[in-house]
Image 1 (cartoon, rainbow, N blue to C red):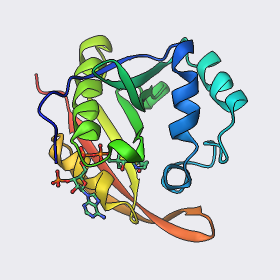
Image 2: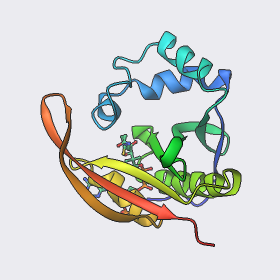
Image 3: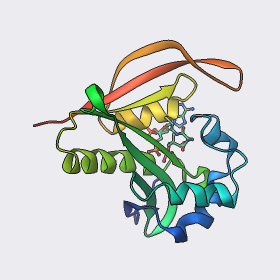
Image 4: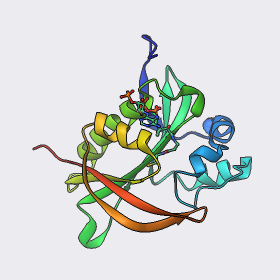
Length: 170
Ligand SMILES: CC(C)(COP(=O)(O)OP(=O)(O)OC[C@H]1O[C@@H](n2cnc3c(N)ncnc32)[C@H](O)[C@@H]1OP(=O)(O)O)[C@@H](O)C(=O)NCCC(=O)NCCS
C-alpha cells in the first residue's frame, strides 16, 4: 500500500549515497533486468566507480523524504539520434510497489524535456520478462511503440525488447 507521507525527488548522485547504493544495488533481481554492464555482486568499489563516472552524466538517486531508495538515469543519444534519450532505473526491492518507480520516471521525463532543448522523445527498453517495469512506464504516460524480437540475451535467455516512449508535448 502507498504510504501517504511520501515525497519522491530525484537528485544528483552524491558520494554519501554510495553505502545505500551498494546495499540496495547488490540485488540479483535488479541485475536480471538490466544490461550486463551492471555488476553483480555489487561491491563498494563498483559503487565508487559508478559515482565517479556519474559527475558529467544525467545520473540521479531517487529519494523518498531524503532517503535513498533507487537510481534513475537519462542517456541522450548522439549524431542523428540526438533528438532521443534512453532512461534506465531501479528501485530497492524493499520499497517496491509504492509508486516510487512511476514518480521517478515522471520526474526524469520532466527534467529531460526541460533541460535538453533538442530532445523530442524519451524511451525505455524493457525485457519481455519484466511486466512491473512496463506497468511503471504506462503509468508514467509512455506508450509501447513495438517489440523487437530476440534482441538480447540475459543469463542464457533470449529476450524480446519492448520499446516504450513518450514525446515532448509542445
Ligand atoms: C520495475 C521497478 C522499477 C518498479 O518500481 P516500483 O517502485 O515498484 O514501481 P511502482 O510502484 O511505481 O509500480 C509498479 C507497478 O508494477 C506492478 N507490478 C509489479 N509486479 C508485477 C508483475 N509481476 N506483473 C504485472 N505488474 C506488476 C505493480 O502492481 C504496480 O502497478 P499498479 O500501481 O498498477 O499496481 C522495480 O521493481 C525494479 O527496480 N526492478 C528491478 C530493476 C528493473 O526492472 N529496472 C527497470 C529496467 S527496464
